[in-house]
Image 1: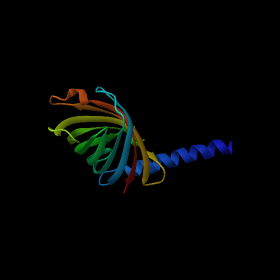
Image 2: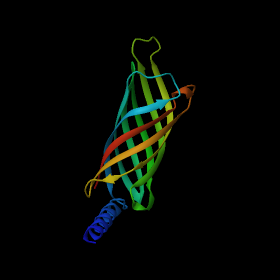
Image 3: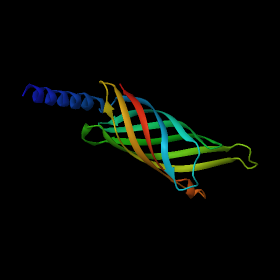
Image 4: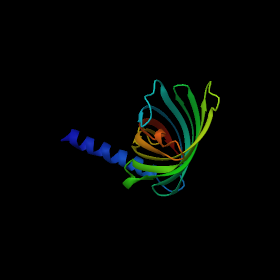
Length: 165
């Protein structure tokens, strides 16, 4: 019986800690790594991405954010800037996000090497609190690509770390 009560108390305490972090006026900074993904284009030999992001809660459970990123794919380097929002459901850590991303791609050794792509990324994830402020945030994403490069759409997974203060 003691173990059950202790388990319930821990679950309640973690919910209360998470509850306080998704309030209006709180700030967020984070970083993520994406290296497991698929695309509708040709197979990739080497692919990874790193993103740095920050945000601000305009309202309870509603975060506006900005991201800067770097992606490497085969012989292509890409730099990106994104603006978007996240909504945290019921203050339990589950979130859905969307935004707009502009990506500049550089192809090494090619004559016409620069491309600019426009994406609409959508993600679904979970903010797992390690302590009152630090989270591990696994998520799945889908990036819809526009322009004439529709074969650059991506589905993937990423793991992030965040700090809420």
